[in-house]
Length: 227
Image (cartoon, rainbow, N blue to C red; front, side, top):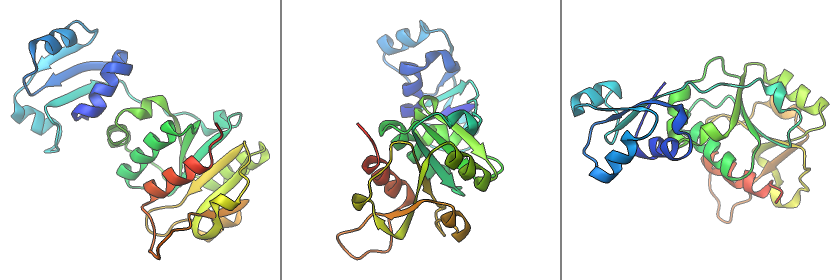
């Protein structure tokens, strides 16, 4: 699995160096830093910028690329004994998913399930989460209805995000909880909403259409956490 850009790669260098197979440098580093990297248990290769551009498919690699271990997805049923789960129902934008993973880790979510999709491109999610994906358990499940039923049978209370829902500040959030976010364009489907225990919203100060799903998700996760 190839990732690039300075921030996610340095996150792995500082927290999970054992997951890096090869570090590719397409820029000069100061001698002290280069010496530090050379002493770590992964291979360091200098490459020309042209090679880095080709490897990153013309993306902004910032001079840092790394071949890393594949991320291992989990089975969502291993999450049934946890307390706080984030379910992404039909989200497809890897930038939003990566941002939500980063917020989820920061705000105490135990695991993330991406539901209603058959395939997930992990590399850009790892990159946009700035490496936090390696700190977060994630599962992919095509059948969201089975998923929600299993969580309900395991004692979870579910909360779905929708602009027409009850103000999250007026809800007593249970400790064993699932937050469900719909996709970027249409939000939660009516079939999914009908399976949820609560529909909640963020009441805004000014009249506005809606918040980006990753921003709304971050606010809701913060308001639903237990210290």
